[in-house]
Length: 281
Image (cartoon, rainbow, N blue to C red; front, top):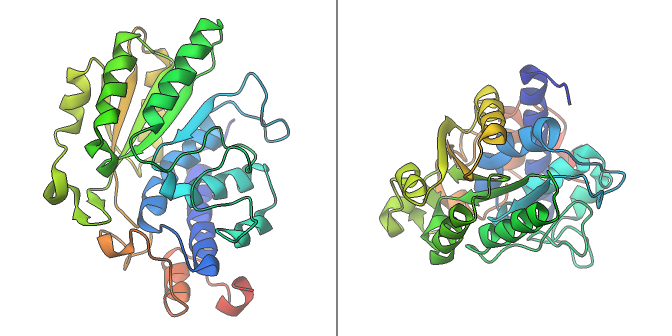
């Protein structure tokens, strides 16, 4: 894909708008972690990953595992934008019978590779995908997006150890380090730093970036592709609720959607001035 950084930045802004609208419509879901991850999701789906919305099970596709499954809106808006299903479906987020549930469902949603939601398990599944692809002689890559609060789960480090042991250089983990989780600051609940040093200690190639810098994300993913003999961890420093000033850096918006009053203010922050009544019905 040949989209420029400016085009990707604009796409990320539009995806943030879509997240805010979908969450407002559902009046349920996770705002902060979806918005913090959008820039990485945008680059993955619209610059880096090989995939085909017309053939979601195409064998040549790269795999994406959203380990922090509660940020499903970030993946759903990207899948809709890429053409896996109509954008109108986003307004059915979390509805009974909808294919867009609160966490990714590989059986119901085109483009979702694996069911996730139980934190800590996604990287293990990504390991299995990466190892299986290599055993089959494939050059497909696997990308796993984790949250920093998720790093408190012990299974993450078992998976990190295994990925290094098996020298899974077709695996790239992106760590969305926004510093907050549902109960407050990650550092206060259970400190996980230094995240880069921990992954290095487990034998990973580690890159540290600003997770909202599209150019830096592209460069890091490009470097991961050419790294041989070890998996790559991209430690991305992000802002929870990024793009909506009154959501930013607030743990209270971990799992709270925009209210009727907040929706127009949020859209204004994102440079979208559509009529609230029009977009919510």
